[in-house]
Image 1 (cartoon, rainbow, N blue to C red):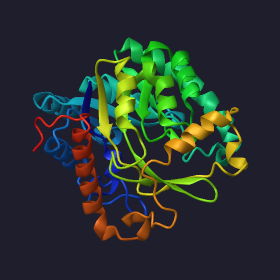
Image 2: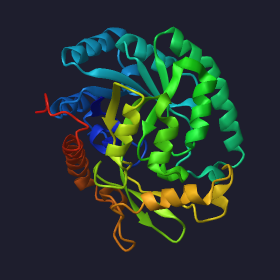
Image 3: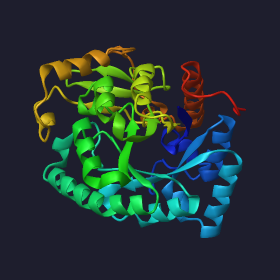
Image 4: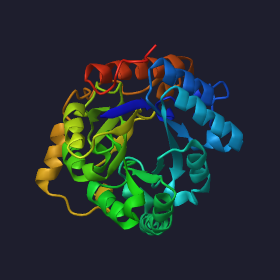
Length: 333
């Protein structure tokens, strides 16, 4: 059911998307070509391609990339930026040239479920999203694409379903499997609610470390953490015969979800005790001890270790997904 490959966000240092200083990029990163090489090594059946890479290419070069991917039987997906940041013309241009069905976009810059940090902007974000979906959803449908909005640590499952219904048939979901915990929802409850609207999947996992204020979500190889992948796959299979999915270990910075503080809940609808208990119970799986060092090499300032850290983790993630039957071994180097 899942045609699994890669996206660049678990490899940001290796690929050059993240570095220190200004601009915040790693000049030694391998970029698009390095991304393609790694995808081929792992036997990727789908690649979610960072849209700024494609903006830098001519139309002919993007068409050439499409032909290269087709020869490898790899499905292209366009990975755009934030919906609240402005027009999606570049992402639509890339999708047209790549003949990509899915345009993935996140919604807001909010992380860790912390709507309170946005203040008055939270209401502005909601208004911008509704307006954008009314504009770009019909255009996506007319041009043969799906605008697949991601649960990017900001919105809950019911809110995302409402956005899909507002945008019409041209809008679906990119389901990030690790991002139910940041909005205090249990993975399987979240999956059941959104499953009919899912069009693309980010396979992400976290080890959870409980704190006085809530919990940290700590990057780990996909399959080593708290996310119940087999059960999620079974729920999605009830609604879909075929989906693309990509491996995405978490960010190089831990996400601290401070849901035990009163202010964190500002902007959220009421949640039952039973729903919250289900989330906290799910977060116990493979939990990280409270006294464990949660820091990645990036957080420790050990940049020399970052490339091997990212590559080792993505390779272990692929191996874990194969062992769970979520990723095929054919064509893997």
